[in-house]
Structures are given as C-alpha cells and as structure tokens.
Length: 257
Length: 246
Image (cartoon, rainbow over the protein chains, first blue to last red):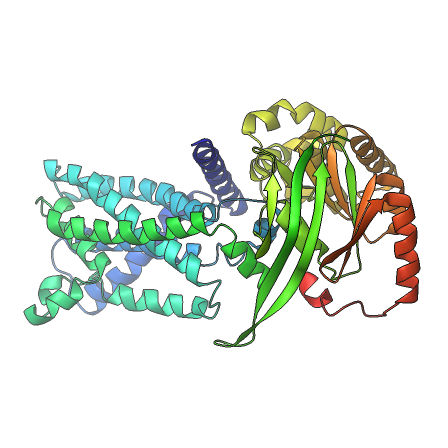
C-alpha cells in the first residue's frame, strides 16, 4: 500500500515534469499538441476531399472523430516502445518499479490528448453537429481506449528490450493498423464478409463507436467495447503482474546488453 | 559495532549474454560472496576491474536478486547509490530536478522540499536553482547531484568510486562532507580500486576476487595485502569481466 502511494506520487510528479519539460523545449510549446492533429487533418482533407472528391457532407467531422483517437493510440505506442530499453541508467542505479516507465508515457499522452478532445468537442459544436446526451458515452469510451493504449504501450515497452530490432517494425505495424482502422473511410465500405476481420482491430471498433456517439448521436456498442476493455485489461494485468513479481528481470536485461 | 543490518550468504549472480537471436551463454559476475554489514560502519569493497563490484552494489541495492545464495536485510532498510544527476531533466530547473531525483531514490517529495535550503547551500548554486539545468556547467550539475545525495540520508549509502566533483574548492568540500558522513553513524558501502582511499576511509574491508569474497577484515592490513597481491598478479588488461562491468 505504502509503495503504491509512493508509486503514484512519483508517477504524477514525473508526468508533470515531462509536460513542463516538453512545453519548454519547443518554441510553440503547448501549441504543438493542437497543431499536429490539424496538420494531419489538412493532409487527409486535401487528399480525400479536394483531390479524390470523396468526402461529401460532414466529412471533416467524420475524419476528426477517427483521426484524433488514432493519433492518441499511435503516440502512446510509439512513445512507450523505448521506455524500458532506454532506461539503463535508472534501472541499474536505483530501485524503481519498471511499470513506472511506460506508465509515464501513457499518462502524459492521456493528458495531452484530453486537451485535444476538448477542442474536438468545441469544433463539432461550431461545425453544426448538435449537442447530445450520447456525448456522455465519451467518458467510458475514452476509459476503454486508455486501457487499450496502456496495454499496447506496456506490451511494446516490455518486448523491445528483449528484441531491440522490433523498434523498426513498430512504426510499420502502426502504419498498417492505421490503414486498417477506418480513419478516412467508413466500415460500411468493407464487404460484409470481411467486417468480422476488420473489427478484430480494437481501434476500428473504437473509432466506429466514437463516430456513433459524437456525430450520429447513437448509443455505443457496449458489447464490443466491453470485449476491447476485457482483452486490454487482461494483457495489462498480466504485464503488471510480471513487472511486480520479476522486479529484477529488466534491470538484468538492460545490464546484459 | 552496531547491529547487523544486512547479511549476504554465498551470493551468486549470473548474467545471460545474448550471442544471437536464439543462442546465449552465461557469465558469472558473482560466484560466492558472503559478508555482513553493520549499522554505522564504513565498509570498503576492493577488487580489480571486473571482479564483480558493480554487480555486488546492485545486489545490496536490491535491484538484482541473486541466483544462488541469499540476502537477509533488516525490514524497511533504505539503501541508495550516490549517483550524480540521477534522472535529471535538462529542461527543468534545479528545484524540480532535486525533487525528481529524491523521489527516484525512494525519498518523499516533502523530504526533498524540507531539505531544499540545505541542498541550495551545500551545492552553492543559489538562484541558479531556479534556472533550467541545461544552463548548468557539468561541475554545477555534479554539485547539485552530490548535494542531494549527502543531504537526504538513506540507511545505507552506496558509493561507487569517490568522484572528484567540481572545482578544487568544491572537491575539498565534498570529500570533507563524505569523510564526515563516514565518520558519523551513517552506514556506507564504498567501492573503489584506490587502495589509499579505502585505507583512510573504511573500518572494514571485503576483498572481491573473480566473483568471490576472497578475504575480509580490518582495513589497513587487508589493503596492504591486497596491494602486494595486485603487484604480484599484475595484468595489464584486467580480467575478462571488464567488458561487462563497463
């Protein structure tokens, strides 16, 4: 219990420091959090709406509801990948819980994307997508995604020190997953017989539900969300268990390389 | 001598060395190390490069659990390594970095803040503490790290080679502070291959040779014996373990 409290003190303080440090290290500081999704949006908008003329009405809102959750997932996974691998100094000099390292990234990206989500809601209101009670479902939806992000982040952080070459594959894997998540197209474009496969990708499920809740003003698919949550919680729980019970596993691995 | 706070019995640690994707071999960093640590003493650990001293510190610090043998420690014992600039973030100021370092060493934020004045004074950084650490010279950074380590008192302080910190004036001050620490009731484990340092600072010495606690005893006679032994077994490149220890 005592160590759990110390863990959260350390985690929250470190995340505050990281956010402060990040804002201090770029001229535009916090603005990058917002500018980045805008650049992505402009790129997709240009390609699909302007060049291919595929967008149609409400395309920007549709795109944003896919893009912003995707960027959140993408960032957490890319940023978490090297956290244990690059922490040789810390892990061999002081006794810290290994779970702290990926947790920092998960929490930091959550805070940053929280701000972006607030902007998304503001944008949707201005854009003419009306306010609805269904927006309340955004809270459980984001909680499910946070669990998924944590599970994926912990997993890559745990595997990379064992097979450092995987770092190069992670970006490719994320790219593949992006195209398979339905960010700039709707799942309805996929042949019915392939939709089962498509929704095996948890981000595809989440994005479909973000759109249902935010734009279409419908209730989310609770069963599908429950499945994503359960799967993520199992992976996350297993990794936390491993980190706790084999506390010296990673200090050894980083000493050995 | 104070109460016994830690006991190592036949401790062995082996690392796996990955040769390729599927092949690996083992390397024994420690094979058979036994000794006791008593409250208030300054215990010296001597041995050649690659004798297993760094691994031993990791075992004492509870970062690595031994593969063979056992370690008994008094419940609640806090151990930390004197490491300069542990976890420093160059974009943050000295105060934030002090708290960060203290938390990483297992102290609380309150402890760090309560000792801030002392740390500021000892490090002689003054108002620089409000500037980002990236504006510090390497000497200033080391001074801050050193001040944090000596001000927050763990039950056992581990020192891996006494470092020359900062300019001549601060070096004098830091070694005086360390000497005072070692003379006080602070328990210290000091690792060094400088025989002279060990002789002046330590009460008792454990001599590690090729992963084994070869001999232990009173500092002065044992260090003399060690020096004579090294003289007789001079090897220009150290042992095969050097590569890993680095």
